[in-house]
Image (cartoon, rainbow, N blue to C red):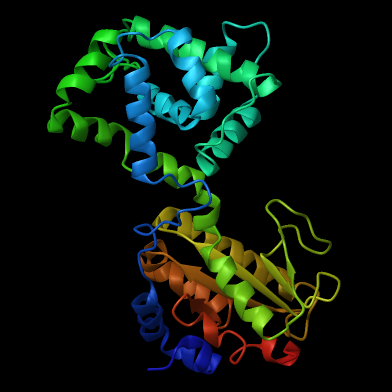
Amino acid sequence: MPFPFEAEFADVQANIDSYVERIFECLETEFLVMPRGDGFIEYAVFDAGYEALKSATRSFSDLTLEAILPLVFERPITLVVLRCVLGLTPPEWASIASQHSTESIPQRAARSLDRDIRISPDQPLAQQSVTADRVRKLVEAACRILGDGAPAVSPTNLHRFDKADTKAGKVSLQAAARLGIPYSMLLYERLLGRPFASHRDSVSELVGNTVENAIEAVLSRADISFRKTSRAERLPGFDQAPDFVVPSEHNPKVVIEAKLSEDDGTARDKITRVQHLAALSQQGRPEGRPRYEVIACIAGRGFGVRREDMKKLLIATQGKVFTLQNVQDLIEHTELSQFRSR
């Protein structure tokens, strides 16, 4: 059976259930594979940082600024290790450190510092700079937290430092380093935090750009003029800017929405967005010919859950729904073919 973009729209309407199934066959789970990104740290690098921190603190018995700060300046990866011991994001750590200082650490600065270290984990830090002052404040906060352990909270709440390695402060950390952590406890804390959660958050934009990158590659290979919009950008004539406009926003003839979703609720919202663009293309066109063609390029299992939603997407785009498996056919079966230069 052909894909809906290969068939006449009348046939798509007449056999829409079959075409929905054809789209569902092409949707794959995308969340199992993540890009490493520029700031990905190999385990060997992280482990070397951990061992250096363990040695400098004498198996975490000496959690003082004097023991840790020189090492952090010399081997910055140890600052990332220290953050993982705390179980905090860079902005969270900065916020806690700022509470005991007259000058706060901006969240953006904390993120940038963490990313710079992950990109160059063994590049020593300058010890006379604004960054150096911020690093000192972060380490001071870490020493205080790891010395105190988790404070008591009400039975209905859970403190973030109530972890196997920080619950009782230095005692818990030493036990974790010397004796290890029971596997069931590791799994329990993974339940609370999700494996790879921090890394996935750091590359979330790369994950979300998977479909957009595929479209951009197809358009560029054909030397098609296009306008790729940025997040929350406004374009004249659109109350919500599409992801791609061909040839430009001043003369839109084709608009493309690139959507990835592993959740059916989010997928429904994204389908509604495409429907709105299709309705917008019909405004002021009494003859029924839209101002521009609307194309949807989708990925993720979220779009493969609700059949009725997929029917709406096929109707809104008149069958022009593509997936990552067939995005290479994008130009041949749409009005984009009119704009190719090679």
